[in-house]
Length: 211
Image (cartoon, rainbow, N blue to C red):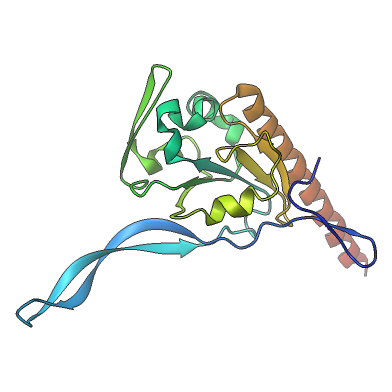
């Protein structure tokens, strides 16, 4: 499988592949009470919104998939038709596949309405986890995540593509979530990387036990 992103060469002549840096996301929008002062000088408490920040847990998810929900693509169903079809009708295809769903929509954790090719989904953003237990919706308020995951991307890749990342945070594939064949390829290549990682861990453990 290929490596994507800008590559450099070390002084020893080894190729150094691009690694996705730590990118922090908002896990959820919540509200809390905060002390404030009214116009008349009285002390009051007001409700203010805030967000929890998280990074992707690469210990529990050494290989993962990241999807981008771009609000600029609302009219075209966010370019996620095949992904939603698989999520609804073939949820087992995504069994144990960690998917981090990144959105730039400020109301991502409130109500949403998705329409594409005569189909419509309604509910809240978390509702898709019904069939995808390893589905993690996160919120990106700026372009930081896009800059990290699409740095040095091929010319044919747009910022709504799914991205496959290995245990070293190397980008190993881009996939069009609007195409069924691409979603199928994504799942197959995820399983391939995961199997390689588990095999490498087994060899490492055996080596430690022999010592």
